[in-house]
Amino acid sequence: MTGVGQVQHERDNHASARMPDGDAPSRVARELSPSRYADPFARLRLPPADQWPQLEFDLPSLVYPDELNCADALLKDAIRQAGPGSPAIITDAETWTYADLLAAANRYARVLTEDLGLRSGGRVLLRGGNTPALFACWLAVVKAGGIAVTTMPLLRAAELSQIVRKAEADLALCDVRLAGELTACAGGGAPTRVVLFGTPDAELDGRAARKPAEFTAAPASQDDVCLIAFTSGTTGQPKAALHFHRDVMSMCHTYAAHRLPRGERPVFCGTPPIGFTFGLGALLAFPLFFGAAVVLPSESAPGALADAIRRHRVTHVFTSPTGYRAMLEAPGPLDLSSLQVAVSAGEHLPTATSEAWFQATGLRLLDGIGATEMIHIFISSDPDDVRPGSVGKPVPGYTVALLDDDGQPVEGEGAGRLAVRGPVGCRYLNDPRQGDYVQHGWNLTGDMFRRDADGFYWFVARADDMIISSGYNIAGPEVEGAILSHRDVAECVVVGAPDARRGQVVKAYVVLKPDAAPAPETAKALQDHVKAILAPYKYPRLVEFVAELPRTTTGKLSRRALRDAATAGDRS
Image 1 (tube, helix red, strand yellow):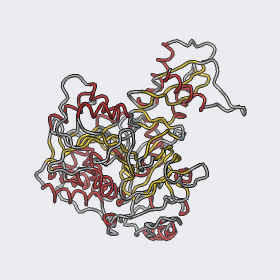
Image 2 (cartoon, helix red, strand yellow):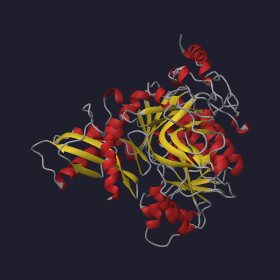
Image 3 (cartoon, one colour):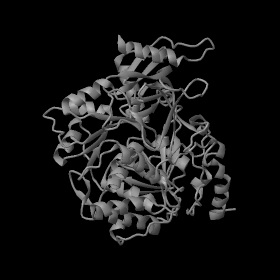
Image 4 (spheres, one colour):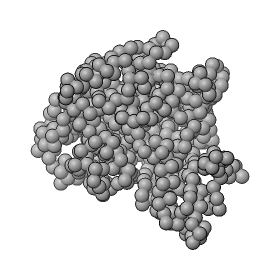
């Protein structure tokens, strides 16, 4: 059985995956809508039925038609609200109106379907920084019925190869400035076709210039996958989170609709790449949902974001606590008077940073926690009810619980493992770790939280080996593997060490081979070695040479002892 018939067969097999049994009165049992895709790749690789999270659709706005193409819906709604001549994307070099964005997306979609043979359900890897062209590429892929495989611009060839293999992405659209690492992918980890964009003579732009500016969106089911978002596993093996068309709409109708004041002329800005689902929502989906303009700073210098806010009268800004600290420390006067809302996510927001921002601007930071598996933020501060140091309360549409060591919900005040249910949930692409993230219908984020008497949630710690530094998720074992590949290293363990600016930094405890010297030059050599293999943000900022590593009574390395040592070192 192949094609659409096979998809229908698999849909029937997944019907019971709609939601496991649960006690939530808001539980809605619904089958997957039949797929409209020609390529059944994603539908056939959904998790087993008994490993699906329980889904909840409490809000009337979360009911969507069976046929839904989220890119087409968002574009049409944005133009209806703002008008085709209104600014959509603003950079230092150019301004794209909504008419420009629609035309570019349509022309790119024609190239994908007419010239490059993209079938609905086909995966297209996207590689680039935040630019108007990359945004148009994302919309084009999804509008054409493809599945966007978003990637971080700092990833290296080895990391990209894992993504290509897992998603089976034969086609890639890549910014000309970032082609090197993608073309360096070898063997089965290289896309069959890499099409460059970003300059008038690049292949995608050249082909698009000859295409009409109209394109009819490909039919898609609300339950068809439109996005594969990768997140590092604690072992360094990436996990691929599958998101449906309705998931993209859901993050707009939950977080954006209930936590972001709309205002009369909203202007968005921020730093997270759309390779992060945090950035995808903040800088692409939410501006479209509001019919807003989005400003894309062309530089990453500390003052660039603050300067963009001042010059373009930005109303909504999104960045990590590291970004907010950088703005506060940037030289020169700070004019942020246009801001209506400042959202912090990606890492723990220290109370000191929250208070410093408030003292400088008079505006409270809106903290929040989300996950790639949940597509966006599900607990957040409310603009009218901010408690500094807390991430806030559940976003409307979500149910949150704290689970004790026996997996039972903690009532009232208390602490436990954070668990969440809502209109979206974890669906890993053909990955046995699905059962680790989803248990008894709950999505388990790997975080420890506490809840106070008023229902506010407070971050305690990560429950696994993930290091979160400046908003980046870094798998300690992956960095260990890179360090161990250096000829001078005998053993190493990598942990997160507290850092006032970045939340955490990567710290490596290293045992050298007998002929290597524990010197600053050796530490720098190890750092440079990691940078050459992995994305630069993963390198160990701290390297401590030790004679031996602590072990448990069974002979296993004691990561807990080293995490405790790193934390104690920060306090001393």
